Image (cartoon, rainbow, N blue to C red; front, side):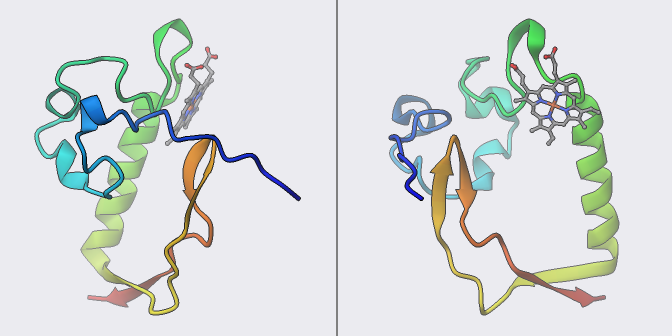
Length: 106
Ligand code: HEM
C-alpha cells in the first residue's frame, strides 16, 4: 500500500514555532499556549477551531490530567530499550511503532 506523505503543515510553521519546530519540546508550553503561540488563536488546533470546535475539549483535558496525575503518583516510567523512533505523517504526526514505555512501581 502506498501513502502520499505531504509536507508537514499543521503545527509546523517555523514563523510561529521557530527553527527547532521539528524538535519534541514540551517546554514550549511551559508558560501556556497563549505565550507559546504569541497570542495567535489559530496557531495551535488540537481540538479544532470555531463553531465546530471539539465538544469534549474541557472534558478530555481534565480526564487526561487526572489520569496522568493518578499514574504519576504510583509509577515512574522509562522508555523501553526496544523503542524505535519513527514519526510519520498521516494527516497528524504519528509514531509509526507507538511509544513503548516501562512502568516502575514507586
Ligand atoms: C484528546 C482528546 C480529543 C481531541 C484531540 C479531539 C479533537 C477534536 C477535533 C480536532 C474535532 C474537530 C473540530 C473541528 O471540526 O474544528 C473534534 C470534534 C468533536 N469532538 Fe473531540 N477531541 C477529543 C476528545 C473528545 C471527547 C472526549 C468528546 C466527547 C466526550 C469529543 C466530542 C467531540 C464532538 C461531539 C465533536 C464534533 C463537534 C461538532 O462538529 O460540532 N471529543 N474533536
